[in-house]
Structure formats: C-alpha cells, structure tokens
Length: 180
Image 1 (spheres, rainbow, N blue to C red):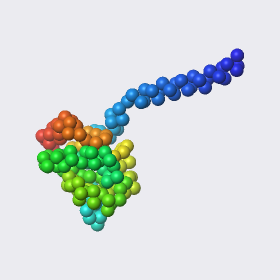
Image 2 (cartoon, one colour):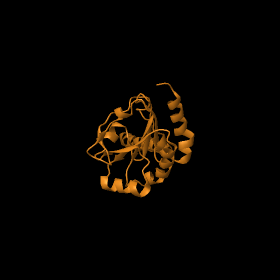
Image 3 (cartoon, rainbow, N blue to C red):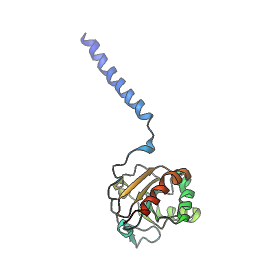
Image 4 (cartoon, rainbow, N blue to C red):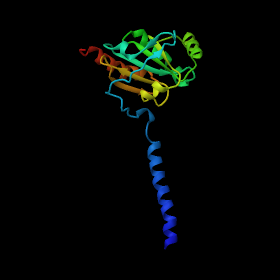
C-alpha cells in the first residue's frame, strides 16, 4: 500500500499543475489587471531622447491629461502601433510622452526620424528601472494619466485604431471634461 501512495502523490501533483496550466493558457495576457490603475503615477526624472542634457518628469504635466507610451526601436509591436499613435497625436487631444525602454538612444532617434515622431517628448529608460516602477510587463504599453497624476487606464500590447476609438479616446475625453 505504501508503494501505491508514493506513486499517487506525484501523479496527483502533476494533475493539479496541468489543470492550472490549462486555465492559464486560456487567459488573455492583455487583460492583466494593473495594481497601479487609480493610483498616483510613479515619479521619474529621466533624460530626454532628443537632448540628454535636459531631463523630464511627470510633475511637469501636472494639471494635464496625458498619455505615456512605453516603446523601443527593437519592438516589432511598437512599429505596428506607431501609425495609430501618430493619428492620435494629430488630433492634439493630449500630449503623448514616450518612455523609450531598454533601447539604444541612437537607434531610437533614427527610428523616430524614419517613422515620424508622435511624442511631445520621449525620455530614456535605458536600464528599464522606470518601466519596472510603472509595472511594465513588456513593450508596448500605454497609460492614460489624469490631471492629478493618477493612472486611469493601462493598455498592454499595441494600440489599434479600434482600441483608440473604443477605449482610449473616450477615457481621455471624459478626463479632459472633468473639472480639475
């Protein structure tokens, strides 16, 4: 009997692991809830991509609704969403701040020259520490921040035209219309 129990325990543990793995594989990774939504946006002071001698921080955007887009020149999905960000920038609804994540600054500047620059400014997060503070899982990710500096929405993955029209712009419009 003791021999059977010794065999059944590993099989039972394995079965439980398979069940949890199966459940996990059915989940949409873009729907990972962020613990930062409805919390103050983490602060940072980072060098600007266009002029590393100048720094920028979220405090400069206090009183404005704005968007933070985490991107990198090596990111294929960032290229896919780039045209959508340019369309949003052309609407001039809110400033879009780029957080250039774990990238080479020369490659990032060249990428923006080639594809166009939708950002009011981009800051450099070469080591990814600021991305960690913001709860970034990978690039691209996009955050909507209200006038008080509180994160109101997080989008994981590339922003599509439908995401922009159905989710992000309605949130931006609501926040812009709110009294400060």
